[in-house]
Length: 331
Image (spheres, rainbow, N blue to C red):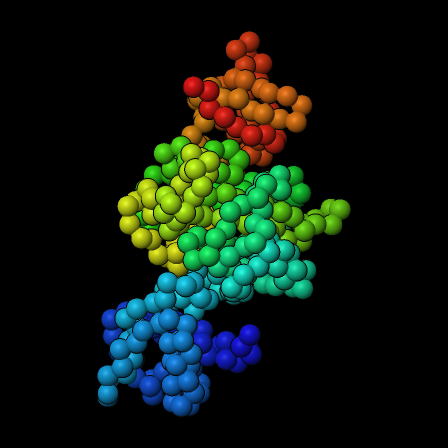
């Protein structure tokens, strides 16, 4: 990995190109804002070219980015990013067992809040209840975000719901699609799963040290990329929109929406998030089956509590509070 000075220079360059839009930036200007020589700027430009960035270089005018790589890089994610802290520190890997594992280690080692671990491929990606998550190369978003909220332990599950709302809004922003949430952590489009969210804690007996939020988004998979059994239950943004989708733009949108909602949540509590979550929920007001470890609960999903617990009303009027279950809509 690059040393801290090189990373800072790269960050300043990316920020400059982000702000420049269609304007050309001279080598001298880039050297001044980056605090290095023009020769060093040229070397950094060449490194970006190796990552797949395409520059238009015009004598006496400078450089302009005209194409960004299909392969996700930390630099591509940073190009256009508007957040204050989420996504400002990117730990990128080509292939990992699980981004959650790396994020846990980084959090233990003191990583700053908002640090993101992103990989092109996970070999043992995990979903809720340790289920396998299919994470092929160059087609989806497989990432983990480190947050460090000052929260009591029992409120930690609310962050899963905050994240779900952020992902729905990010997908809407980038694609115009209208996703829905299936409690507690699945994002669906036309009834098929496009995103899974896995929230894990690092905590002492009385306090949360960090919350690691794993997010997997199917972005550019085609129908032939899914096996027949998966195709029945899963989809991708490209399949649903009919066009290729920029993974970097989706990530930037997720970071932006999550940071906005996270700050609202910290300032105003869960109430405003709860209203948003319920507006996107596919199951609220419908008859469902909640499959728990102690048996099935059948009834109408009538909402969630202030802690994010699902409320199900049976035909006899009894209301159950469900903390963990697989949810199925009744036909």
